[in-house]
Length: 296
Image (cartoon, rainbow, N blue to C red):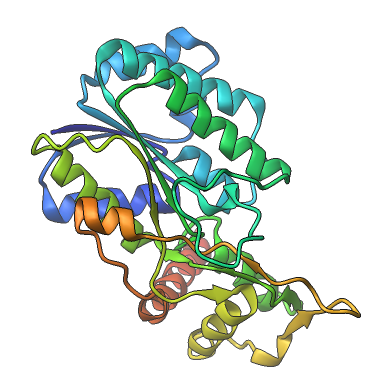
């Protein structure tokens, strides 16, 4: 199956490419974020048509949300252009979204049928992009992940480790519970969907995936620092909980993953098992970059 990947230089995009290099089950063509900054519908359409792909995998908007980059109205237009091009060429559209579409006010895990209710700007923009894909492209798959983390790029690990390495303290709340996803695990899930779609399965709609063990930002940081202390001079005491006088209301952005299990036989795995290798890769990448800078 021919696959066009949009956002190949994002954490999830890189992981999808790396997994493809190992599996070699599909023909993969990739476009970086800069190559996807189309200024017109004509440019976007040309990129999709030239690829002659069977499916477009779009990780751009999810990466922006997890990386702390503000999503713009132009980003929504680009989703609109891609969706129209996919519809016209009968290309399937696998759009990667985020659990951030939900407010976290439900006590139970969120189902695919639950209406997105996050009134923050990032949640509303993510939901708008989803709605565009739904309304325009009939053969669509919307896959919502928990927060993606990786050893490279802007994501949970870099957002937490970099301030601590600079000697700053992180003040993290302990009320928002979610299901972080290692980029490698996210790539595993994406490839599982591609493998089954290539056999003729047409399960269009919305699906959820998150790790099997949940965590708050504070709990994630604790595990992160426990592994990072082997490589960096950081202290777990640098992480502080943010508490209001009366305590913060508990929030829950965990995702119910029953549908993706029943449809694609995709099972959840724990995020903690990936932290050790992820931190090692992060350290090695930082060390190599420092050596290259010294040589230059």
